[in-house]
Image (spheres, rainbow, N blue to C red):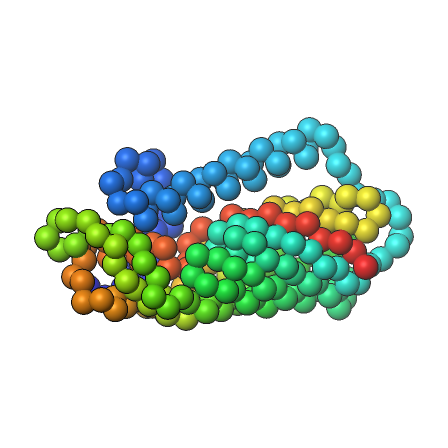
Length: 225
């Protein structure tokens, strides 16, 4: 069963999240629950920040370079990572990032568009490369219906990220942001079974869903230098 990035990516984007709560496949359930919890955290932070009225700093000071940390799923840094952003004009910045996610290490580059350093919104076009993992083991359903640990090689893969950031200035130099968008997979199926096990169609779908690509949730903090 071949993985079609266009069809399966669209299906993954349009699939209703609710029924995944009741799936029996642990890989799907864990992936969904992590994404759902992160979404709830981002929504909570958004409400709190708006309620506390963290405003844009009115100083004319500019900080063309910043270093930061981030977290998320299918985002710029992965589960945990670091970023660097260089402002090259009033409306354009270059961003680089490195982190660790569920598909190995993650390296990213991006162009960020906004209306200036104090802009609340920014639009990001990026490219992310994921290293993959060798000898990765997870419990999957086999073609006979039983469950067992299956050895996989998660191969390197990449995505084109279309995202937007909601920014809050914190003090004179720093920035907190939430990131939302969609990561478009640039390859098809990028994994293979290494121990000879034949897995069920549901398990194939579960691994395909875990492959990078899909809805982006993220948060980060950048320190102006």
